[in-house]
Figure: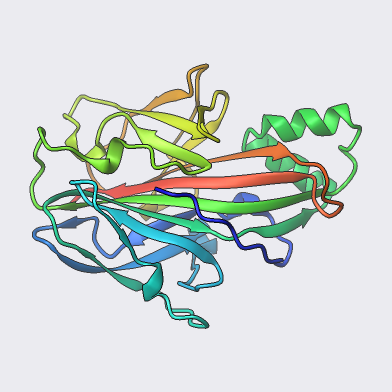
Length: 270
């Protein structure tokens, strides 16, 4: 999937740590090819809200079918609109991948809040950089954007079928399962890799959250030296995996870091 240039706009300052974002289909499983409403949600617990489908906030919205065919849904978003959902069609049996990327926004957090955010999310590059430069007492200024993927299953699982669920699509920060979550046996765990700027990312904190009970994560793991970790995911309910990473940037007098949020959502039938 070709990476599109990101539009930049300024947003009101706020705590980025509470703003995990994911793609939420009206149904993760369809009995047959069809169309479902898809929303983009942000936050957890009492802070959860609909992020809205807006052309100035979404720079990429696509799906990849089991045969690899890519459909661009961005033209469906009307300029100036802010719809709560968008209808997406899935016309082949098998596992489909939905992907979105947001434009950039800025965040300016007080020093204590930014330090806490960096610690809670395992943002080692920010922690080390602020310690080395003596910036722990200064506000944390960052440019941030979001990436999100969702898996939609159409029809029954075919263990021998190809699936975009396990494919890298070239996102800046990307969670890539090594097995299709919909094709796991009862005793199998879900192995995954995290990539950042095209390379496996070690030391990243990955969180697994059950979306029906999303006030706090159900499990948290850190990627190993090869960018890999494993989760035990119950085969019921709706789930989100998310990860955040950052890097120091120079040449911009208004921000010190570029931070990327990324998620993968999927769900099992009742």
